Image 1 (cartoon, helix red, strand yellow):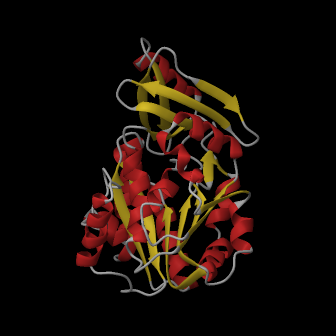
Image 2: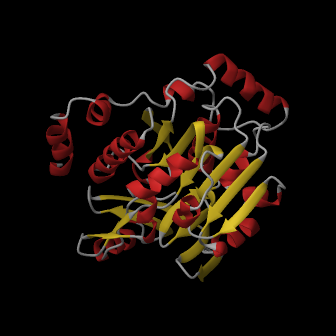
Length: 335
């Protein structure tokens, strides 16, 4: 998971001027002029290398614990990684009556896979990750890095789009796409396409739809609604998914302090609207997980309804009044 960011001279100056006495990992969102950083320990980074695809770092913080940073962008921290990863995994899993076959694209840290495996109905998980070095680093530095040891998991170090294109039709009950952002920003504020952009095309989303079973569920990250560009993308992707054939596509929200603005989102999509268990059944399944010693720390069953309660202006922009696009978003740009 990542947030659309840019590293500029201005951002570097902010780091130096505002936190000159501390070492930090920080992100600057040029679109809204927002800067956020986490103070790290003096011995950070404890790991630093360049893979075939990106810079990989592991930092430590007194508050957040270990921090995984890819290309200068915070991916997760030990303290609050549960927020994003538990929601990405359990929200779609609990929307299916009995998920047996699961596909996870991205999420090379292994956290989402580890949460999926808490469901006893799971028989097989295909995990597709492009960068093998990320997997190796997380196996060494994070507790959930042992997810791939489970015999139900098959790891595929390959391109997610190619894997989905060749996936058997109607095979997966749940697909979770935990990929990085499709776009980045250069030092002049110009948008450019990243390799992961292919995972957001209509063709790829159609391949995911075809790979799902008749009552299949798809979940994928869509960033924060606090960035106008990200909210516009969420609306565009939601409309694509409905055009492809999903009967429902809803934006869910979660709170995570280590991500800029403290809010992040996902699109939960279902082939059959209304399919899946009711809340009482979700609570029963959750209680069973707890009894087996596999509880969560962020996710709870009430999120199956509550995660989709959004601020009014976001709700209207995504689902209703189209004229709001010109008012609220432009107002945010002018601030």
